[in-house]
Image (cartoon, rainbow, N blue to C red; front, side):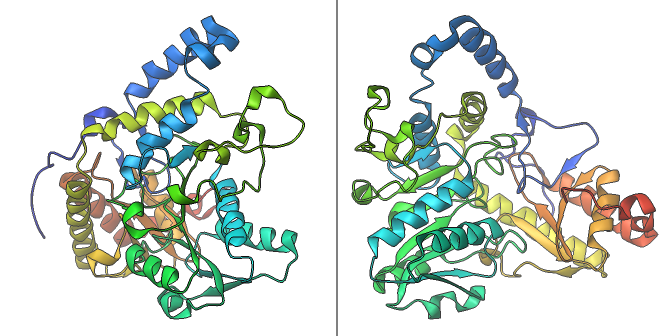
Length: 401
């Protein structure tokens, strides 16, 4: 197994990490950056408390969705002015897909894959049923996506990294395939943004969406983002015509008139407190080399896989073995995966579980190093060897797994 100390990428001292905990669940919820507490206190006390409603102008709350969007744009290879933040990821998926279908009015098929996150598929089903124009959602196996793209496809809607296995689609190749067939490409970057370099501009994809509470550490329920290729912003009609997407929200016109820029993808009043947390958390990325982050993520992931396979034979690797085909998580399958994960969490190693049998481990080099990986594997080995997962307390299912 490779050796080595923490690299220059690690910023563990910048996060609130409980003593005795090894956190391997940043692919589900990132930890709290230490600077957030003071910034949030200032926002609540000084901006909201002292300025009251004047904060919308004086504290820049109204401009926050686009301002924070530009910070995210840098992390996903998008130009300034092409990303806006607000609402939930489900809403942003709905907006992107509705816009995509309007761009291809003669086509009736939305293509996705069985590795996509369920909410993306649910939103697609709901939208297509509402439209009632004969559209259908076609779901294929992940490795069948490229060969399924043809001139019948209106939109290809995929999550770049599979939430269960960590398998990673080839964003550039699939985008090119979709464009060659005349389909609109929509990427969900929920498990990509902040995990490794992304370059949406280079792929020419039309739309991209993502959440900010995973690798971007925006906190539980942090708002989502949407990217629109700049040349398509004026052609993108907001299916959800909220007042914040209006050209002049405070003109209070009787009819909707979309903003001329990316702001047209805003819907409702932004969650200022949560967005302030996110904006502060994103400052951590100002001096992070995403390419170096990816190198360290793969190094730690390989270390974890090698050690688990050597010491925990009951587990089966559920992630792709080639490193380039993985995101920034490693998944193992185990028949008693839920209970084993609960036993592991009880020992201070926090990962999570996805049905039916997947134990997920997020690899986030900003706050994980080789020593953490080694210690986590040793505790996992002990949990399996001692069968501590058989404890009834570990068997009881919680509402969040």
